[in-house]
Amino acid sequence: MSDIVLCKSPKKPIILGIESSCDETAAAVIRGRKLLSDEIISSAPVQALYGGVVPEIASRAHTDAIDEVVARALKSAGVKKEELDAVAVTYGAGLLGALLVGLSFAKAFSYGLGIPLIGVNHIRGHLAAAYLEDESLEPPFITLLASGGHTAILYAKSETEFEVLGSTLDDAAGEAFDKVARVLSLPYPGGPQVEALAREGSCSVPLPVMLKGEGDYHFSYSGLKTAVINYVHTKEQKHEEWSRADVACSFQHAALDILVKKTAEAAHEKGVKTVTAGGGVIANGYLREELAKMCAREGFKLVLPAKRHCTDNAAMIASEGLLRYRAGLFSPLSLNAEAYIPLG
Image (tube, rainbow, N blue to C red; front, side, top):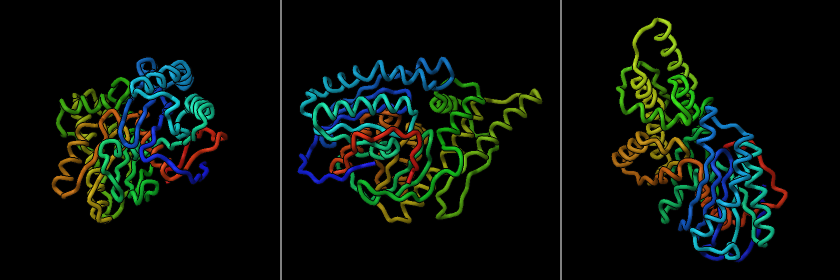
């Protein structure tokens, strides 16, 4: 994917990040690790009318918004395009049509300005979001990744190298939240809706506990998701009363408590002092609270991205772009969009 280029680079390069993998058209500008601007134009309200993201609608929305969102980002940052040192853009994973809008724009921008193009793996972007929260953050550390497409625990060896200690064997945590939301007749997007409903309930619904052996960092959410579906359907078929809030609360605890437990185990095993996290599920308030409690109890430093930088955004793409810029990992103009990229 990348060409390795050895070059003299400024200590604090100015990088434009572009993200268009799903329903958010986003652009951000950073100078070193300092975030100068962070703009998003979302088509989520339109997608909600259809109960989820419609790829064709998302692509058209990106086409309409890409020029404006980049202009906003540059203006908010107080940066002229001629001052940019590189353009970082998501090339995968995501919706192909949506990715191509952002990637094509970034290619033209970098070519016209004569500056490097940096293709960014969307998931690596989520992992790099923590660097924006703490400018002193340095590897090694343990990262919990929890998003709609991936759930994993990773060991960051350096800024560009990580080891996957364990990942989901089937559904990702975010995917499970969305499916449970549909069972509970909650609107799109499902994750925040489940979290809000869970605050009104109690953890009184018997659901399987996803316990794995010590040192096993893999996860499986299909059984938990199926248990929720079976519980709801059984209650409905028997015309018995049941509480949506109690189901949401019980599911949320079962789905997230294991993530906290395994993150702590991994941090102890690797002997690190710092824990970070990334991905849309990390915006969940209960998970953030439990991670904070665990780290305070176990003596780890916790670095969590702002909630805005857990969901899809361009700041995280610019952040990962900075890491790759420093390593001289630039991309050719022949770079193509990829709908799927293996986590490793």
